[in-house]
Length: 178
Image (tube, rainbow, N blue to C red; front, side, top):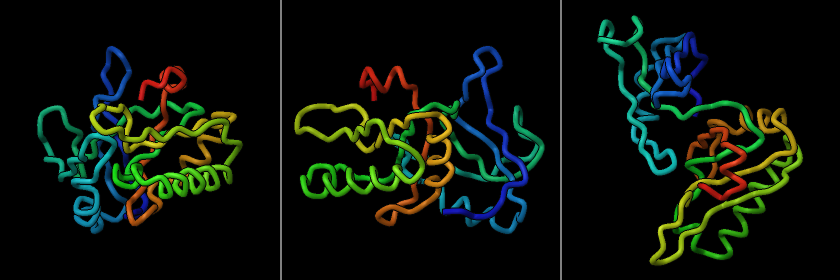
């Protein structure tokens, strides 16, 4: 779901750690799309969280002096592991045929951007809290291949849902810390 080119984007980071504080500000080149972007993005499921997207208050404390949607984000240091969000539901993952189709579709589509070394899609297990359910993790041969996939897949639609992407820490991925 693309609303148009951005004029400005400010990912707010902690000065001490350099990590994202979990929110950002953006301004569209065409300000008339702001309301549509807010409506389209607000409430979107992002992993286990729901996006809160609203108009930023100009002049509010600790906020940049421009208006535009407020978009919580996740850290995005490029790695060779891509996390795809908002693509699958628990119900789809429980169905064996559906799960196999999803695995095949993701492997094929991601393979267009580079060599897929591994693919993990955590599945729900009744009575067990399985971390990462609803997320898809794709490990590429290189960071540049992962970047190509990230650029191509962000905002695309899969099963009528807008794909959200983030890079994922390879060490956590290999330890299966989803």
